[in-house]
Image (cartoon, rainbow, N blue to C red; front, side, top):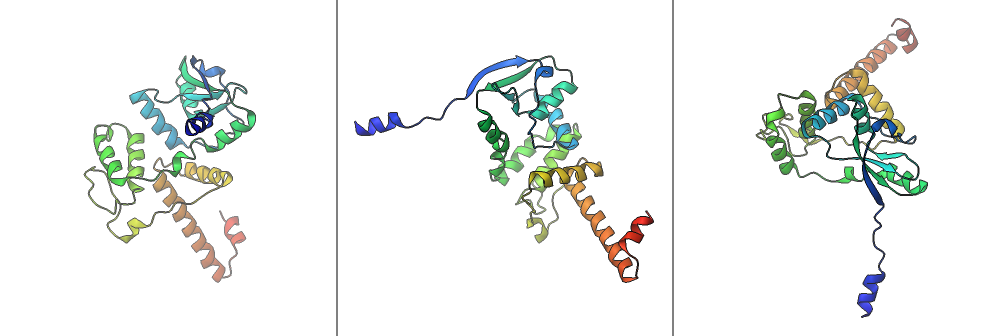
Length: 231
């Protein structure tokens, strides 16, 4: 009896979802504290996916404040394509809870670890769209390139794999603060390369070449200021 009472008294997880509606996207308001910057490659990939499979996830809005908690990029794509109505889920949470939700909503998803075999099999099953849709193809390529077990093997995907040597095991996964993410995304955008891995390599290459030029000219008595003045 005591055990049953304890179970009944246990605090249940609250359902904060209050409604689901089809809403004119022009009436929705972006969250002023949204910290995510969506690069062109991400937007192109998501738009291509949405054109193929439609809406699989809704925009999430706090009923109390009217602010979006999740789905800013989906809203942007909807406005771009003049969608008359889009799916919206409304939740009822306080301002403080909204801040926590906004900071962590997708961040927790990013903590998941990868089952590489399952990923490669899933990518293989998407083969029909590889040559039809470059943004999606680039996204899938990035997924394969980030696979910890790729190591240059022919995974059966028919897509380019990593070099077959020990360097394939060296995965760089930096932890960045929002302001650093913003700077990185701006740098990636400047390369105008839709493949984020290649774009990052272009940035690294440019830095190495510039740094090497400065070091070389420093040894010859030329300052960085002199170099800048000539460009």
